[in-house]
Image (tube, rainbow, N blue to C red):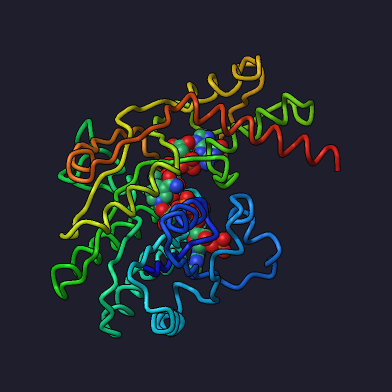
Length: 327
Ligand code: NDP
Ligand code: GDR
């Protein structure tokens, strides 16, 4: 039985990846940071029905000693580094923390593997935010980076550390440059979930308006369940490498709103209100990924179209709010 260690196991991707690896017969160890709200922190793992099957261990990405102890005791075959301060907007409010966790945190995991001479394969959760102010119409592994936020800059550091440790120390380290991926388990602060939650509250008469920022930004959105499979596929390759994971279709926030509101018979223009405070100091206007390398080499492809993803998210939020109303 293979052992996988997942940092960020309580997040959206961590939960889906844990479920996927358990399904493949892995022993899954999840690094969880201590929280005063420990009753809600495993909510996503609970939602997927896997919380009792994951071995949760106490640690923090900023604490090298905790990482070393955990790696030593669980002796993983694969390490997936998904933990991060992952909300771009917050990275301007907490730039140093974002650098410590999202950037240096990845270096801590790589250092722990190196110091312990652990031969585990390593996955780094890199991001399309590294492309930022795009230098090519479609972004691939060969597109130059131009990050536009402290988050994007921290991810770029972590990405190059992954490449560097692969080249310097022969670590089987791969970096997945994933474009936006969403699901009913997406954090409520991200725009897709904010919209689907807002739509369901408006539909149920719990709210009238939905405040949003820039409606013209475009993103390449896929389903998180499809994307965690790509992470695993990368670590099954003999040779570690970097891969863009994306759908190849880009859609505006405005169109996202139209689809989500229309699903419950509403017109977004009656409810969406622009709030200038939600605009970002520097925006990533458009992202569009070219994942042909992953499609050819890994045999990966996205399965869920955006319309189905948004409908699934709205339906899940309707159920959540109806359940809350009943209790
Ligand atoms: P989430 O924000 O849902 O999850 C982040 C996870 O990191 C949570 O489990 C969180 O724990 C944990 N974490 C935060 N700080 C620390 C810390 N100091 N020590 C240990 N754990 C910590 O992110 P996603 O699941 O959406 O994304 C997973 C990874 O992929 C992230 O690195 C993200 O930046 C990256 N990424 C995501 C994309 C997306 O579209 N979703 C696209 C490209 C990259 P807690 O529950 O305690 O907060
Ligand atoms: P992003 O995701 O920054 O792409 O990072 P987010 O959903 O936060 O923003 C996407 C776009 O929507 C615009 N927007 C708003 N965003 C939020 N959150 N709230 C709003 O009210 C709002 N109105 C408009 C934003 O300006 C932006 O253009 C996500 C994260 O998961 C990162 O961790 C990951 O690396 C990247 O995706 C790829």
